[in-house]
Length: 348
Image (tube, rainbow, N blue to C red; front, side, top):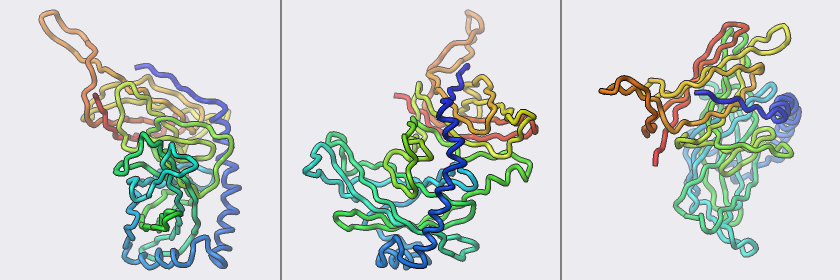
């Protein structure tokens, strides 16, 4: 199957430049955080004490039940952006209809976060901060039992961590806590180890360019912000025939030719039970920053043999579990890497 490479040139250039510039802003934030730790904390004393009390046992407070279920690691110069995903019911967040905006249900929240280095169970506080957010759901879409995805973004270097977080409603003061252990790999080491690696691979429904870069930490509903992008994931990786899933990621360990260009080839295919259903035309890139839409086909080719002979016919794709497979080759170094993204095809 043939598909096209749709690079948004301006967006790509801005993103690459931002990778260099973004953590000029992030580093002073770390210095400010160190000052806060020595002086006044960004977290109120009672909430800080509550978070620290539950550290040893990872005992959560469930007045607002939530837990982080996944992490995306995104590139930034000299470090990484960590995006943490959580899924929360509407009712515990106590959405209400404000008199000034009766067309929406609204929830105003604060999230308080502590990041601990976690080496062999020894915890050392690295940073703490908070983010304030306001979420809205149209009245005709609101269901107290429905769940929505929320995304917490924060810059972190490679390492093993424990995230302690408290989420509170600013109006009712109801609050819940959670703890999440995770690791950010040192992708910068890929070149030293003579191998290729990528940042997190995930499927995006859509993404938009923002006028300005948002500060970290931030806490968003339905999307996360990265550099100047507002990115809307398929959080459950559930796709329908005819959907287009967008991939945006960075490849580490790539070598460059005499013109300082990369020579990357990626073969994309879709598999079911490890059998190829669709194979796309191989794509070539001259940058390790990859931006590629993946069209989900509506049909597959099936070999038919009957009294009319042998032929190929188009048949609808079956529902079920699939994988998007990427075979990445660096033509300069000869290094190769295979990555797989599982997804579910929903056929209605």
